[in-house]
Image 1 (cartoon, rainbow, N blue to C red):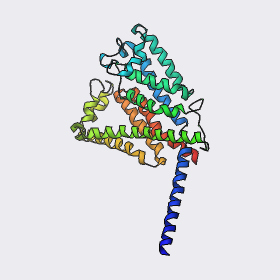
Image 2: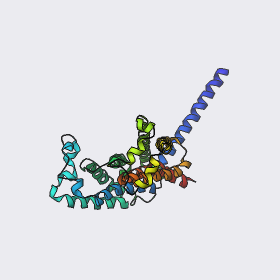
Image 3: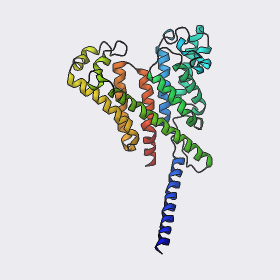
Length: 312
């Protein structure tokens, strides 16, 4: 008798587990990431590249064609690189055509149709421009990961919210694919911050706190001349640079760990993180990096935070 009762109990537990799993899958399939935070991320990513093109002389960006180290033999995609297909004499016209396309992308019109040009432009720019930095790499990676998500996006403008109850088979498939890839993007952002923090721990100058002084006075990426009289007195203070050095490392670890935190903390973390990257712009002048990372932070924090508001 006891054995029969144990079997019934086991079957009941299995049934309850399957019901819970089915409920979770239903929720996962019906959860929509297609809101204005996703749109804002795309706008920021496009704006970063567009502003680089707008404010940088094309002769500096694309001296005389592709860099020899980025030939199509080494980087196969450069055989189809837009900046390589057009004659060098028309590089100015090419720049403005790309700029206008990026403005259309940033406006939010038809993400399903503009996602491929966005990825193509970002990748071509990354593999052809001479004046690039980490922000251009991040933009290229994220626009590629967004492709499958946006190809299923039926919105006219990416500022709109795509509501779905996940009842139809097509909606469920879209929900499962888009949410899975969305969390891959979140993992990518998490790894960016984790790698940045761990990478610093392996450098003696970051451990002893002297790295900020060297980076702030770097001949290429250092602070502007008008900032030096204001900040250099602090940078010669051992306590200040030590706290600044370890403060950056700890903050980047917190941002990496945020992927496991409750969504109610996301808005506060987003605001502080954007402020952190804005200070990097003020000191180092990495504008495209700011736009790329702020776009990434929109995906990392705001998409789910916005859904949390809608669900209330």
